[in-house]
Image (cartoon, rainbow, N blue to C red; front, top):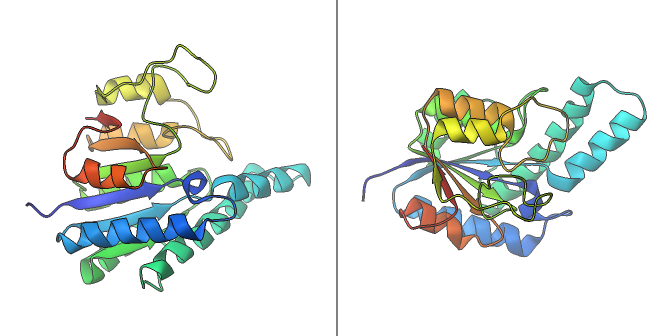
Length: 223
């Protein structure tokens, strides 16, 4: 099997609020199994509901958008630290280049948020760009990308494979603190610009990540 450069984006909502230790252990096991096959993995972890609660608190005391984002970044880095420690990794990478450097040394690296104005989806896209990744996997709280938001439109249809242009058409837009999208609009634009392969899967079933790595039919493939 060809060694792949994989960016795994784990939604904070998948880990739980507070994080479920059983879920963290399952993902640590999945990541270890992937890396044992000689694949390299940069894991980017989101802040989930805790991050959005902090954003709401920051907003309600009058803090500007940039400071709301800074609070969310800290929550995501704490989640990333937990996942990293479950993998025996002490360091949370603080930049895409740092993550690429670390994954070259130890097969697996972890990151949380990066800077105001972007979500961890965009962090994953930036890592993919800096690394020329073979595959970005988004472990989402949905089964994949739909024709519309399935939480708002009961007639939304799950799409098995779409082009970059179609992904931008469905998911494009602007960033806002705490945005909760299957893939955030800034990330979708970057992924399309760099023609990176993305697979969005239901992260409630960690084995879906293995299926995506092995080329199985799962979720939505973009590219």
